[in-house]
Image 1 (cartoon, rainbow, N blue to C red):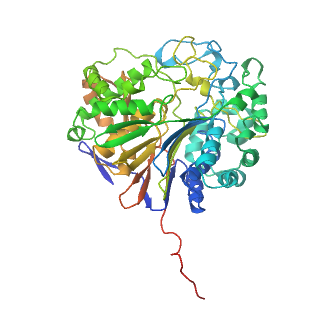
Image 2 (cartoon, one colour; image 1 turned 135 degrees about the vertical axis):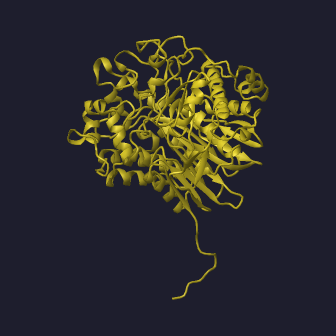
Image 3 (cartoon, helix red, strand yellow; image 1 turned 90 degrees about the vertical axis):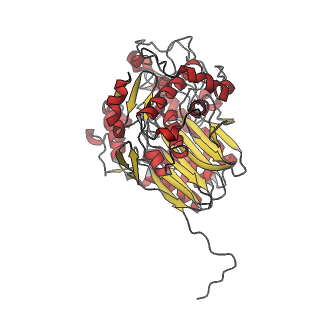
Length: 554
């Protein structure tokens, strides 16, 4: 698949897969296989998504876990959109003064004394993933919950092959992982990072999953797993957490209504606050609708400049109003209106003269996209926030807790300051796009604050530039929050031109993480695609059962 950027060729590294009975795309092969297995035994897309996510807690332990948080965007076969908000919250005893900031500089704004909001027990917020997955599977799935957990138990007990991706993550935080005895035993055996190709078993975690299989979310949210988690978090003296078992018991996942916008005859659906994507992807597309993007050409100086300006405007408004709608007034209708987009046109070219403090979000997350033959679709993004979360492991459980406290502003009196019960803001963008009322494609990716601008660019790639799904997810990206611009390697030849326009350009390995997506054809064929930025794997089902009434003779 050849894509031309200016005069330079770009070739997709992966290939899509298509089928009529269902498609599963995740960022690890065994995660995809788990979802595919659920479809094969008669489950629907919701069963498949939850099975995939639970299995990813085993094979992508650096990215996601039952003690993390995230968002699942479901489009049901009857056309309803449901957003399951399983984001983490601040505990009842947490307050805005619990951390000591160390700097007001943009790059260090979220840093605190002794990294207490980043590493260790005090970095852990009330988890929501397991509550959310159990809620959606019980309410919208078809299979017994025990069946949905089984692939994850199998992967943990039998073990799996360590990938280069996992090995790289271990090396990135080797010192912190080595400092925790439980984490070191698993990830740093014999004092060295688990090597690619080696076999990793998670026996203790398999037993934890068996408890989840029997008890559901109650195993963590008040049961034995929750007790073990709280015991570990409160065992570190001065660095101990203030989370309690009551915090776990009282946590609820929330079902929210999606945010809907329109772009060149398509309906754009995304999650509402505390997620930024539904609001600001819609806003950015509304602005871009005033320009002939196709005529500019993909990757041209003109188009890159416009993208940078529009993304900058989106982030400026996100800084002004974003977060948990129970605590922050987010003007959703205003930001997503066509009239507001026309007003934003006057802001193009008026970039900030210096970097501004920006909310910090980890780029280490996972995403799954699943669709079944009946019309159910799931786009779900879930995480433990940073690589390996708080970088500790709960003894005898294999559970790696999140470090979501790093996403709150460590200063009092701010929109994202710590308040008991407040959900963390997020850039997660599990998006579903429709044409003439029917699903056209669904997508999402990891990547922290780079997620929703990357999702927006993929939408442009398909609608404006006419790319195939595979090209759209693999195409190079840019990112900016208003001052410097980040460019992926395929855009490196644009550095001089953009520098000449007054931008500070930074060349980076990736902008955001591994995007995966599913497109829906008029012939009932679904096509899945995953990009080169992660271990993304597609499985599609075709064929099917025998024609009813067929008799077999020996």
